[in-house]
Each structure stands twice: as structure tokens, then as C-alpha cells.
Length: 88
Image 1 (cartoon, rainbow, N blue to C red):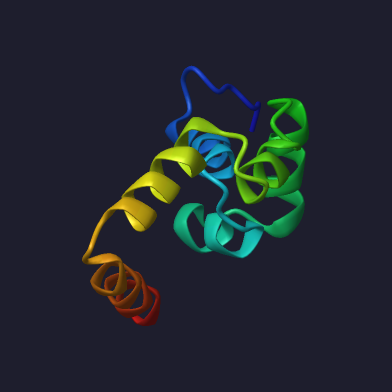
Image 2 (spheres, rainbow, N blue to C red):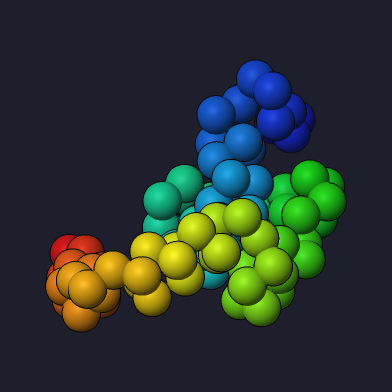
């Protein structure tokens, strides 16, 4: 199967999830791709540094989440909710 980020929704989804900082395991579970398929699409999409940038707080998504978490009195509720979602 040819990789096409504009036509194949799963190929695009790999890039979107990587840019948002999600792990390969998460992307594999969501798309059904193997580790090699995920890595190859991340490399071809040229987004391999995005997760590092996310963890370092250098992306708009990371910054927005920090603002929500730090500026929101219900930050503990947010963390608890995220933990519950991970358990599903």
C-alpha cells in the first residue's frame, strides 16, 4: 500500500497523533499499524521531532494544555479524567 497522507486517513492520523505527542504504542493501537509502519510514516511525514518538542513544551498544543492545567482550579480533576481515559 502506497503512503498517501492526503488520501489515506490512517496515514494522516499517524502524523496528527505524533504531532500531538502520542507514543508509537498509542498510534499503533489506534490505527492498527505495526511499529515499523508507524515509524516509517512519521519519518516520511517529517514529524519525528514533534513529540520531543511537545514534551519540551514548544508546541501550541503543549502550551495550551499547560495553560489549561496551570490556570484551571480544576487541574486535579483534569488529571484524574485523563487517568481514567487511559484506563479505558
